Length: 169
Image 1 (cartoon, rainbow, N blue to C red):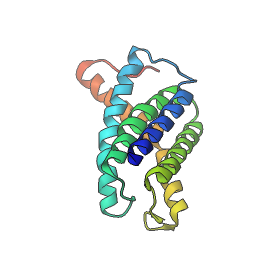
Image 2: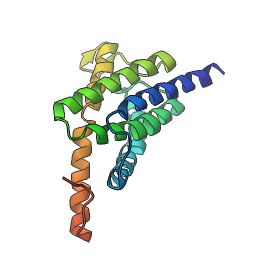
Image 3: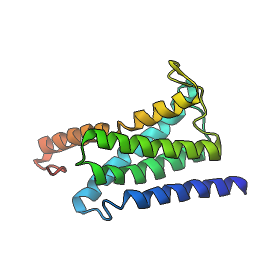
């Protein structure tokens, strides 16, 4: 029962942050919904697998599969995709700060709730749990840049094959 309450607390945090994320963009148009779907597919499952694989080589602290599942499919898939669409026209440094900050808040909460993100190093170079938390949060700040590059690549491939694009300038 205690674990169920912690899961619900994490989901409530994600929901509260999602409300904040949606302040700038309460709805998505049809083109944005397609992009949102691509972001979801491009991030949720691959990060779920990457989190597990990185924990096997001690680059990330192990977390229960269900924590990894809600973190990747709810937080990263649903919330960060919307955040990207709401601030993608801001400067890259603003996007980086927003993603890194939200990421740190979520990691701190997941650490408190589940003991996740508890490693004592970041890539064996920087020592201490804060290095681990900050290192991964700063890495998450790259989400907009990686997403933009991925979407541009998909757009070019699609244009080459069908003569249409998904991105609007």
